[in-house]
Image 1 (cartoon, helix red, strand yellow):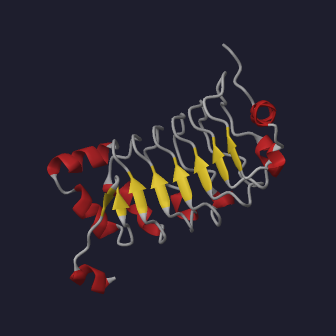
Image 2 (cartoon, helix red, strand yellow):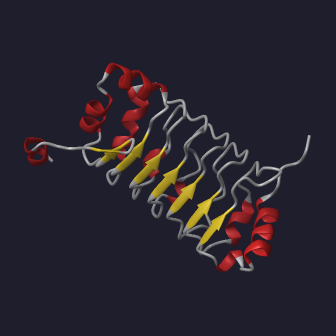
Image 3 (spheres, one colour):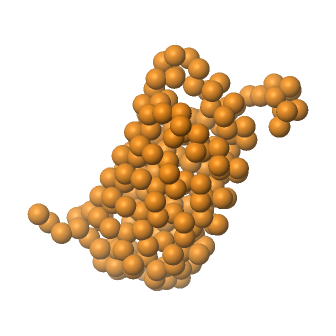
Length: 191
């Protein structure tokens, strides 16, 4: 089997292609690297100024080694093999957007550490029950959520009560699956 590309190698290629130093850059895209990145390794600590990190379309299984990324606001991990949300603690105070669609996530344990999260793109994962979904209510700043393609959403969209139930559970949400949430005046007064 072919060995995956390390973060260090991918950053080296990125620097060549962009004629820039990764350590000084605020936005770094390591998307669809061949062979794919399999691990978020310790080399991530070499990009401390990064505010937007894209590691989409790779073969990453675990979120890890984010402790050096003190300025990270947007983390894009879509289209990987991530099974859980552990490992986000290091960016809990800075991350405002997490893009993690098309992964294998069933449980939302660990999401509560993202105190500033406003946007969560989490479509096409494996969340099945309201108990897990309810963990999103810990995110007091969450205003936009994309959850389409999860078994829970598919079931309740088919039953016709998805948006209604989500908007009651996540009161600050302004947009669900691309649709603005319209609250009537009574609901706004309750907030």
